[in-house]
Image 1 (cartoon, rainbow, N blue to C red):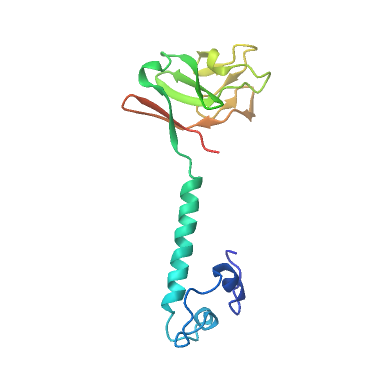
Image 2 (cartoon, rainbow, N blue to C red):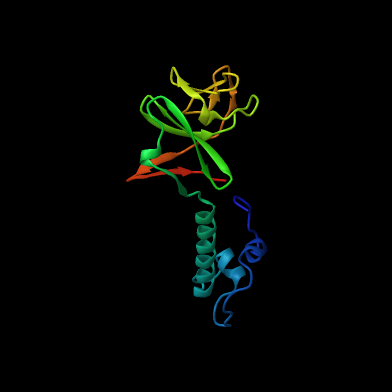
Length: 166
């Protein structure tokens, strides 16, 4: 509905639904939308604020949250990779030149377990057939269009947290 002309208020009326309080002394929705009213009715403003709250609430629910996948002591050593599971998802966590990264654990070539691979020249190498991936972008070295999903990762205190998203 963004950018649409609301015209006589029918689109807005559909979007906002029935008014909360319809007192004869208050201007109607059409007057509020077209600007012919002296002021915007309080019930109209309350309805708009309720809608904004529900949109904000829905957006907050869609936002991914960080989940704990390991303890700091379980992280892989320098230039090593390791598998961690959260629910049904397995993540490859690697320590690449001292930077902790997280990506999908399944190689795009033949499904090899990336977390069982090694780190070589700053790339994570699949143990099955040697496909290499950039740990920051997830791009395969030989074809940048082939990418593994990369996840934000952080260490808070002793907890290792990954933002898995949708």
